[in-house]
Figure: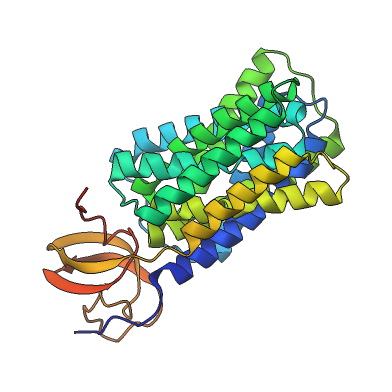
Length: 352
């Protein structure tokens, strides 16, 4: 039997989640600028149209990294598209025009809070003491930002953005059930469905047509911050679960806030800075969390991308196969003790 490789199970997933966060965070201030005088539905359609285009372009040059869709995935991908690529970006586009890029970027951290709570409620992912402290710190950060704008119209914008983060958190929770699918297929389906829904509604409600520069800018933001970012996010979620991926993804809003500051959005009061510090503490607590105990894997057969150096995949190939690959394979019963994250093989129950 292969020995478990002595490395942090969070490392590979954390790097992917961090890259996803940076790709998303970089686009937020540019969406705020390019979306001026563009309706929220049109903005959402262009963002996820760009995401779908990214998947289509990458498909011929990117190896398949998971199973293909089956009929039972249809309802889940439809809900993911409705929440994550229709409702969420529409609320986000409406809110960012009213709350400003800096405050909006920081408020996006609430997605991590909602994702952790939903992952616990739906998938029973464990929340230890550090994770609970992180959720509290991020919640305090969100309330602090809201109080900073309680006397301005920006509060309504922040509430819309908070609603978007709740929708994206629901999307993240549902997407965990697709984490063993090929991520480019998920990006393509989610982007195409979301862009179709919001584009049709934008036309029905006669939203103004965007200028060519604005449309191209929003498509580019969608390709990077929603297409490439989502692919990386799905690969991370496969390795470390919904809660931890969502937590590390909370780095993205800080990237967005920094870019917004550089571009001249200096809307940083004392309360906003305090909220940013609270969010930063929450991110730190999540990223530095460790989890390990004796656990049992029950026999199962499934199909997903895997490697043979992780201590869980010891089946034989003839000739031998190195690196990540995907096919149907069986696992026997295995009991061992090692650090792990709530990935596809570690969704076991924990004592309350």
